[in-house]
Length: 194
Image (cartoon, rainbow, N blue to C red):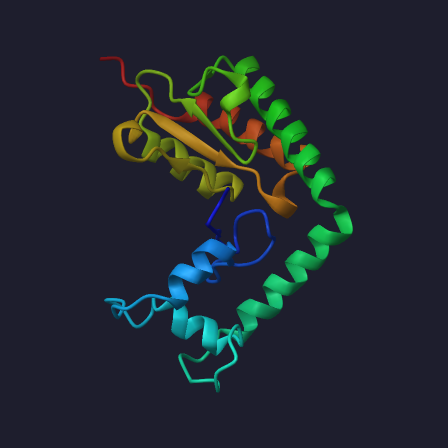
């Protein structure tokens, strides 16, 4: 099973970044509460944080000033997700991901992850065609279409672009906007002849 699960509030939860929902299994909680050495960081002391959030029977100790606005926005995002239904959200993300992948392929773009069954429904990565500068392409799309597309990370930096469709932004309308912007960028950005 999973002992510790965490996420970012901006990942499909329709909330701004800044909060990190986290959950611990019973086994992980036992480890945390029976720890004999002090954690190296005050901010990562899960026992102290658990106490701060009322997860034990001890008197509450102050840990930090909570980002209340972030919590209210996270609560609203979770309410939207609950209203939509988790299974419906999964289905919507998968459908829009497939729609995006098909559109990218129609533009002649190669998907970075070849096997459909291992692609994430929230992030789609495609190979930037030879001769294009990823920074020029993403800047063009941002400046002309007000859409942010990210470059690759690590070994894929400069070779691929990443498109995120998460939460409220995962719509066919937005997929069409992104595909139109990409087509426009590929027609207008300088293609190196070397």
